[in-house]
Length: 168
Image (cartoon, rainbow, N blue to C red; front, side, top):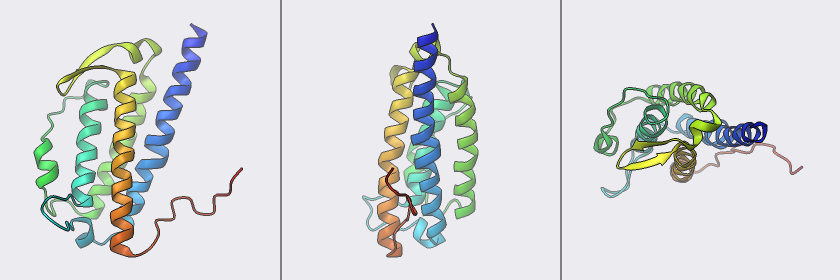
């Protein structure tokens, strides 16, 4: 059992690092670099704005983690995440991410080693919490890259995610 707890703790710490400590703050930094107009800019009708992607990420995290693992009462309106246009201000989008970060941390840290293996419904799937947490982390990372690219393209400046980070 002690080894199970050590594996669980390492897994949860890794999810928290990539999802909550790295990628989520990067999306917030991009929002801070963009104007209200840039947040909702779409180069064409087949593309998503940064605002759409933020709403999509929030919907995904609410459904996959907070509802499926944490038991939150949540009804997702996925289509609205992509059709929204200037429905939230920059400050509101940042607040959504800050609020969800706090909820996620609580839920993720409450998952026991046994609960990591329990299968539960999410969307049209039956997944265990390990799969859910890996999915949301890679999904968030994928869209973080899109948001960073759009931010650099629209602002003509680097995001400076790593600052003065030196190799150890």
